[in-house]
Length: 142
Ligand SMILES: *[C@@H]1O[C@H](CO)[C@@H](O)[C@H](O)[C@H]1NC(C)=O
Ligand SMILES: *[C@@H]1O[C@H](CO)[C@@H](O)[C@H](O)[C@H]1NC(C)=O
Image (cartoon, rainbow, N blue to C red; front, side):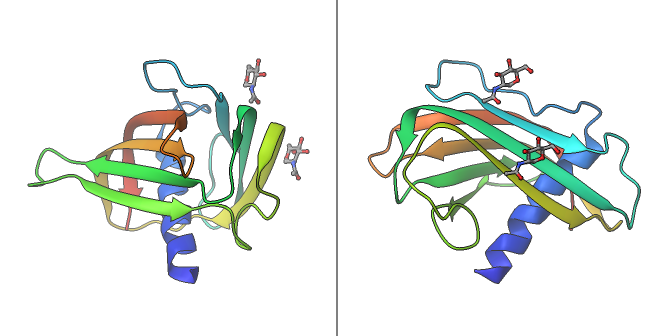
């Protein structure tokens, strides 16, 4: 659990390397719009960074929902897929979510080795319904 959480923090910290404040939505139609914003927009290494996520759950996010990350890099043989359950003590304790919900995470960003990956993050209900999707090319520090 803790390891997963750290992984997600690392993934989220990729926003710091992007020049935009807003995580772009995938092409296509998804029922639940999501905004992901990072503050401050110009991160200072060693200073806390706030990640602000908001969702308008027109289709409820059911208990058992997860975020599926697919990461790829031209040098890799195969993409990496990673599933993170979100309805638990670490993330969202009040599933199901309907209507507006927002969530803040603070973390510290540390400089390190980085790798550029193409990331797609989908919010998926246990029945397989994809509710939200964001994507982009990001530099992930490891
Ligand atoms: C996302 O941001 C846009 C533009 O600021 C806003 O209109 C929309 O209501 C926001 N959606 C959510 C789910 O926060
Ligand atoms: C998250 O931070 C934003 C911006 O400071 C604030 O408007 C919002 O109420 C916070 N949400 C939570 C759940 O603390």
